[in-house]
Length: 167
Image (cartoon, rainbow, N blue to C red):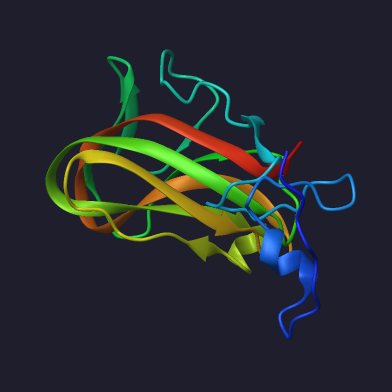
């Protein structure tokens, strides 16, 4: 077993070992999101993220759930498919979803604030694919969802939200 020699640097001792998986005085030093650490992702906070039934989601005009996917049909910009979940302010969450089809516009994931105050938006996606984004909840998070960025027609599946930093 190799022995690490510690020396003081302007960046600090802990920063030299962060994400290396090496214990520092008997503890691991986390470096998340995205880096190696002993901490990881918690359980999925979304119910029915596979859209197996037309339940658990609040559907804005033009959104439906059918055939195991969330379906957007000419959804106006900003109109959402959303679900109330328990989130903590200032905490990072990994949001993953499949954009199965796109025939117009694009879709944007969002952590919603109370009364739309403090909404945290992801990146607009305009091509089919599986997307993962890490968003940090604002001051009063109340729900997660996906909204039309431009008039959107397409389908989504496998929507998941998991908290970072769970040991």
